[in-house]
Image 1 (cartoon, one colour):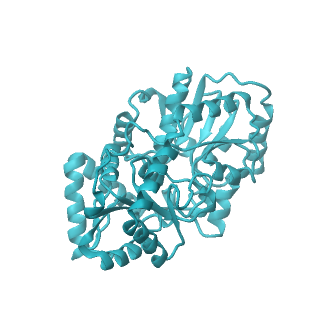
Image 2 (cartoon, helix red, strand yellow):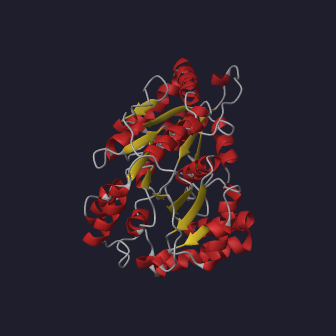
Image 3 (cartoon, helix red, strand yellow):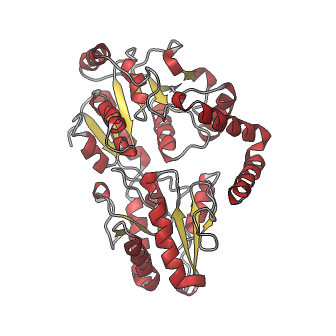
Amino acid sequence: MQSIIFYLRKSIKTIRSDGWDGFFTKFKRKIRKYFKKNTDLNSIPYGKYYDFTEEDLNENRIILNKRVGTLDIKTVNWFMPSFSHPMGGVLSILRFAKFLKSKGVENRFIIYNDVHNDEKREFENAFSKNAQDLFDKEKIFYSFKNDISLPECDAAFATRWDSAFSLLRFNKTKAKFYFIQDFEPLFYPAGFKYALVESTYRFGFSGVVSSYGLYEEYKKYNPNAIWFNPTVDRNIYYPRPIQKNKDKDIIKIVFYGRPSSERNGFDLGIKALSLLKKKYSEKIEILSAGEDWDEKKYGVDGLIKNLGLLKSLKEVADLYRSADLGLCFVFTKHTSFQPLELMACGVATVTNYNSTNLWIFKSGENIVLAEPSESCVSSALERLIETPELRSIIIKNGIETMNHFDWDMEFERVWNFMERGTFRD
């Protein structure tokens, strides 16, 4: 009964935000996904899509070896998935595409997953909304099953592990790049799926890698790579004005809660927060955002209020600015946007220890790192609640850390790498 009520509330929310057309589009997508699991690119295997031959590898190698000297880049093909609500990774792709446009580059977007007509409308609306200056239907191609002729280009990008199989077989380009934002083999347990994703790192594509730690991982497979430091849009993510006597108010905690994503440690988070809530009761308020889920199903009704998937970056930033503490996890080898956004908004943040992120996260200085147990995470949050002086230090240094990075500066380095074809750190 609880699940029925949850899905009824969720349906009403979708109708209010997206209208009946949006509701039926999402409903039909879920039905197709249920009955056609083997045609979803996220379920392995899908027919011949993931299969590749020695001939594919050799032809790809020929293209990679042809490049000599500086490349004059006027056109770029992006192999990317469709989306209806772009997350940080998609927004980074669009942000870099806008930067390339400022260099006189024409961007083409090759949507490689299976997209039905109603989903095309939803995707194109989302694309237009989030990248109006890039949106042009004539420059969006739907290439599922390779059933259309794709335009030649000077450079082409894979943007996710499954897109690498499309780029492997696409040879009408002078250079191939891999826009990497996570160590994606860890999306799966060790086995065939892990090995299949890992194999894409040996295709030889030049790496454009988000964060130095992840760059160090990709270099083990292909030394021809460059990193960019992930940052945030400071027109959106900025701290609230300083408020005096804040320690006398109820402490508000924001949790990035996504039960569908193992790497975001949802179960650990709700256990630690439940422990904290039982100790502090009405002295703290705990809000979760990032995904729709039912508080009753997870046994935290009355302890944690879930706001679900927020519709705009402004809503996200406003929520963060209203908070005192932030909690988020990432257990794969990359630097997630959530702690960076929280830091930029002036929130004292707790996250898990992850050696890949020690290039930016300094525990006790600009963030607090916790071991992955509910008691350790709860204790880290408790330290910040009980020690306003520490909280102030973390907030001040977190803001200063994020002020050091600038998207244009980072992308300029990447652009030089793309033109030259090599980088030495």
